[in-house]
Length: 164
Image 1 (cartoon, one colour):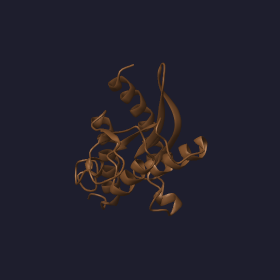
Image 2: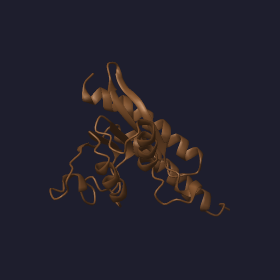
Image 3: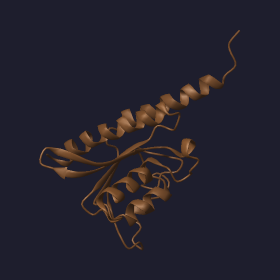
Image 4: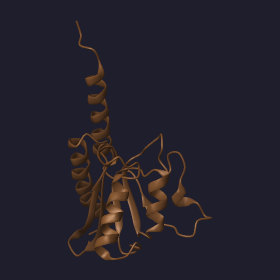
C-alpha cells in the first residue's frame, strides 16, 4: 500500500475520533497512532481532544494517543509508529511527537492560529532540534476542516439570541 492510501485510511480512523470529541462537547480533533501492516494501518492507540472534560490543558488528541501507545508498547519512544491527526499539531504536541521519535506525523487541516507544522511556525523543520520526524500535511484536509467549521458554526449559532 502506498503512503497516500495508507494515510487516507488512517485519517478516516482519526476522523472517527474527532467525532467522539464533538459528541463529548470537545473541539473535534482526533488522532491515531498506527504501525504499518501488510494490508494498511494497524491501530496502536487512539485519542480525541479531552481538555474540557478532564480539566487538563495537555489532553489534546495527540497527547492522549501518545500516552496510550507508550503504555501499550512499554516505551515512550515509538520509532516504528506514525501519528495521524485531523488538525495540524500545536507547539506542545509537536515537541511531544518529536520526543516520542515517531517515524512520521500526518495531519489533515492546517491551523493558522496555533499550527506548529508550517502554519505559524514549523518545529518539525527546526535544524537545531535533536530529532526530526517526517511530516505530511493536507491529508483529507477538507473533511478534517469541515468537522471543525461545523462545530464552531453550531457553537456560534447556539449563542445567538432568537430572531424576532
